[in-house]
Amino acid sequence: MKTIRTCLAIAVLSAPTLAAADNAEAGLALVKDLGGVNGLALACAEARVAARARELMLVHAPKTARFGAAYEESTNDAFNAQTRSGKPCDDATALTARLNLLALRLADALPIAPKQ
Image 1 (cartoon, rainbow, N blue to C red):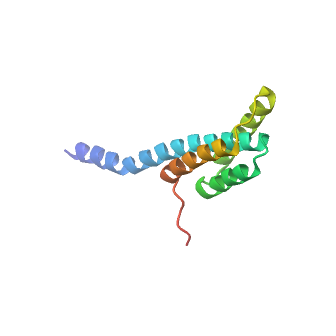
Image 2 (image 1 turned 45 degrees about the vertical axis):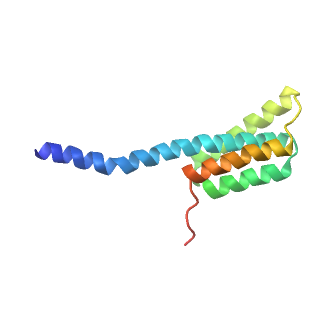
Image 3 (image 1 turned 60 degrees about the horizontal axis):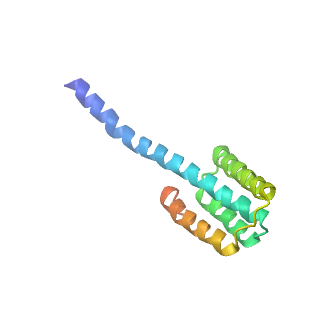
């Protein structure tokens, strides 16, 4: 009986940790997507879109090397892919629409912490 209680206590106490880990992974994937939009915006000279992508990154993403590196790597990959492809750029409206969808998903996965 004591073993069952111990297992139950461990399960209950670890549930928030598992949920936080899932949110962190989902958030990391979104940060990579955000970096991709940023790279496209930079390659296509859409400064306002790139500035908003950066702002979303700074507001939502945890200030860790892992998230920063993921954003930077995705930005570089998207920038290089766009400039090497020779394909025409998406217009600012299309990039902004992608950014708006990401902003909504970021708000769920990585909500902004209240200022203290």
